[in-house]
Image 1 (tube, rainbow, N blue to C red):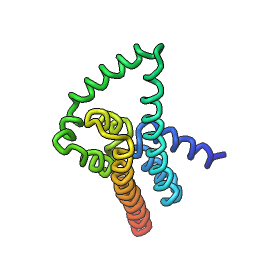
Image 2 (image 1 turned 135 degrees about the vertical axis):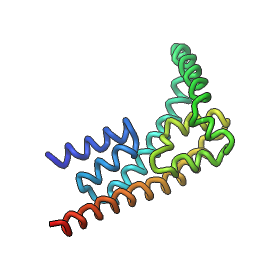
Image 3 (image 1 turned 90 degrees about the vertical axis):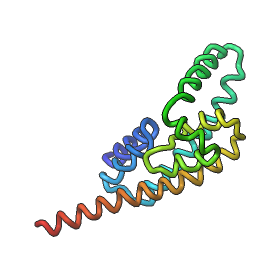
Length: 158
């Protein structure tokens, strides 16, 4: 039951705050590093695919036109944010570089960049997948290393 609760908490954290919160949580509970890496990577890809699907399908329905207007106004506000300001000069490369930064590049940001740069979903998904792979490897490895060093130092101190 305890392991189930830990995994459920990990998934919830990942969906709410991304790998910057969920991976330290999982590493802190001593979950397998390979499991953490694979699940964090695949959850981000799945969330992005769901976002693409939902954006295309939801806004094609008539009765959701108000939701589309709100989403477009939200998109305009996002396009003026510092993150997008940082990403715009880099163009398509930002879809790769943002997820490669271990604590940045959530799938929601990638959806907005895809829409702002008017890219095809396949192209942005491929760039995100590569960047996300690198960022997830860096983040999991870094946190595993910190925890390992902390354990070594704790053993040496006693």
